[in-house]
Image (cartoon, rainbow, N blue to C red; front, side):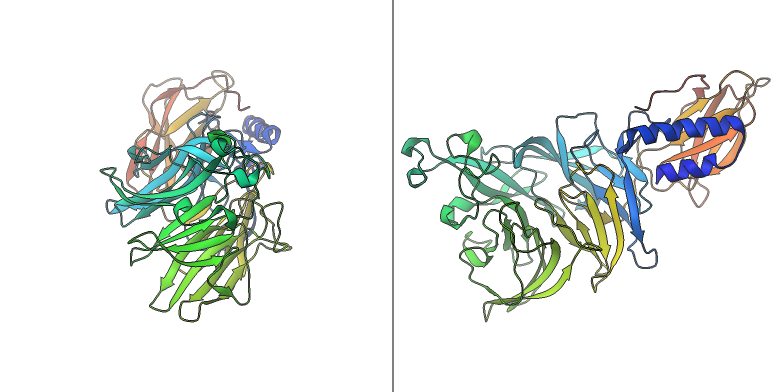
Length: 508
């Protein structure tokens, strides 16, 4: 973690270096829940504390999150040391980001995330795709004249299409719920599959066409998230769609939190092939249950058995079916209409109860990676459920809809950032260098001039120290630049030439 790196740097060296390091540490201590950097004072990244890491058993890769209720909401990538790799925050504190992940698009890895405005339990916004240079290459929006895309799903299918969720208010007769006949509104849970390049709607499904409002576990007027049904802005969110997946046969898997049910949907006509859970389940759950769940995914399937994963919240703050949340893998036998638990993954120690959000990702080596939703923690587990990684964002108020782990190669199109500081001409010089999003930097070559020569000479080869690398020279260097170098010795990029200054930016 950045603070630990600074502490190590300050544990030895000259007085000037120690004073500068302690100044940097003080800025982190004061912030407590976020950190910034002398080379990038515009970044205010959440601090991630790693409390468990078994290096021999964790899966290689980076951690992808998009926390909110934080200093600067945004999509962020971290390594398993808890060090920042990339901040995609654009400075906005009003828009939120969700679902940051590596997605396959046009045959190569890209970054995808949702960006928009939160409105109670849903959002309105757009789905953004970046290339490995972190340049935007596509934006996807809902179609057929519906409201803007929602935050709850972003799922790239076959490199070409995207599954998104939409929260669509509709007029509905709610006289039975003491709402005047002409004034009733219900939130329709909609998903669309859209061709990313053309925007063509390939498939659309609406919950009100297939799932009655009587199947909900969240009564009208329960709270402001559920709604009172009196206007399009307060439509009764009886369904609350929160994930959509697609199998090789072209059928869909839909999770609805407010009905505590998972639905298999025909890709031909939208009919419901089976219901798992809820008030009207067509599948008998034999040795487990779930409620208020998120993130239902197809794992494998044949003619008779479907294996799925899901995140079982087990509570919505009103109705509880367990004392802890968990990741679940379950099988559904379509011949016997029964379902049984295969595996359950729980947070270390006494577990966590996450009353909202959360996800379960099954990695290629069959490890499980879990985001704990409104608890700002993430964990990795071996196939048998043993926790091998656990980390938490420092601010308990922070929340993160989903967390993922992927391999990723970032090649930023902008230049590295360098700051050089000296208290006065003739004193020692400290350099801070970083390159937001670069994943291939092994070390930095630092070049500078001297008081007697304007020629740039190599001052140091400094190994990369997390997001930001610090080097202190006992000599004064009026001008400097930094060169990023890969492990094979090739040059990746150079910073601009900077003048050494006697002032430092405020880090909070």
